Amino acid sequence: MSGAGMMYDMVLRGGRVVDPGAGRDEVADVAFAGGVVAAVGAGQFRRVPGARHGAQPDADPGLPACGPCGDLRVLQD
Image 1 (tube, rainbow, N blue to C red):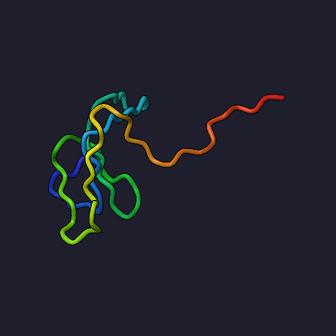
Image 2: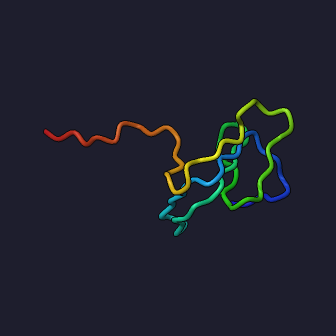
């Protein structure tokens, strides 16, 4: 996903992005628009002027960039 010329509601900068389906395991920026991931890349996204305060957080370098997850426990009989 890319979108260098677009503007986003929130940009999370410098998180570790892992997407086995796309062969991606890297530190990147994740841009959100309308409550969903709109683009993934490095240093090219701009936040919409006037977006809510704190809408451009920096991740700790290399820590996973992940959204809410379901209960990942495996229940066995």
